Length: 494
Image (cartoon, rainbow, N blue to C red; front, top):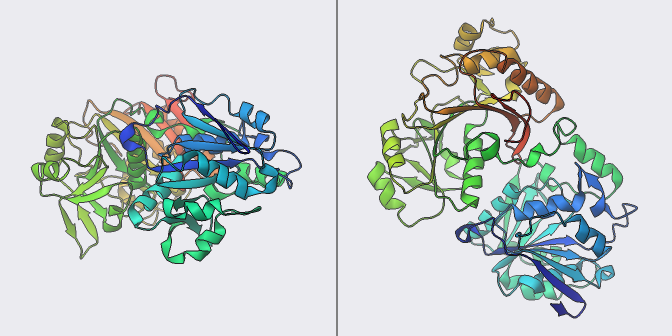
């Protein structure tokens, strides 16, 4: 198809996201620029073994954006070839803006023209943000869908960042843009229409203007030199959860963040997901990639979720005095698992008082007896820190089980022992449940080395050795840096 100054090509029909989970927000990846400050076409520069442009387009395709348009211009044939290994059924739409030298506005208009009749809003994504993850995109889309405002963009430390979403009401204004400008003027002119989504880490939004920026981005990705390509591995696959229906999460250092990441992965595939707890959760955790639902029991919950396809975070009551959501008994979870309402149920089964590490008390974790997968979580930020209550929840239990003395540094070896001990992190887990370990907070080279040491020790011990052991991070985006399997005792993509 051809419009004045624009050629449009569609690659296949998108099949990776089920119809019920696609959003009404389309994605426009702006990849037509001249890269004047880079000294060459930056979009073709290699970043983690792939052209820079590949990362942005891949992230858009991994999100709920539908459709996804790539606007080409400068060296369009070379950029098109750089994206030729994307799935043939991606449904990707390529637009060639022949007027690319006139500035960014021409690409905005060309991309919008390709999708404006089939979407309610459009997200405009720079092609030079390789660390922008599909989960971040989906968070922005969810904020747009739920916020009641028709412009949405991220904010880090009070500073506006891209990408930005514009509702259909602003399409006419976007079409009137001229020169080398984007939608900034429209945002400035409509402050009351803006939903600004706050992020604590700027990493996903860092872009590339000059060659030195690439080196800086690589430094922000610990483990790249050790395990290239693992960072985009899905947690579901890495943790061996593809067949698991009732997943129990225990430990410390990111249980709720892991639950949220898994909910996003499952729901993006069109699955109906229930998140809940057999203990307590912080009241602010009702905000997330789910609809919060208070229910008295299994029947009440089933009645409240009969027609809702969105993920649900369920709890039986709110303790406002203590700021807690109170969970269900494990028997209620077992009853819910026997129904076909939810294809996945994810349950937090213990607490850790926001510490990176913990040792369980005799009465915990509180597992549903029908759980078929258990994921133990540990925070790498606790490794090397003194063994006390500021680092380890129930430090005296950790000392008793591992042989460390109070105030000694918490060693990788002691964490490995806590994982495999019958009274350790997975204490009382159902015999049929497949065990996995996730070491979170691996966001520096030092923490990566410590996590690798944990895995080295783990597979040299006997006891309840997990089938899968994974190291990575959940914030600001989910990244997998190391994977070990019990059967192989080697690094692999699950």
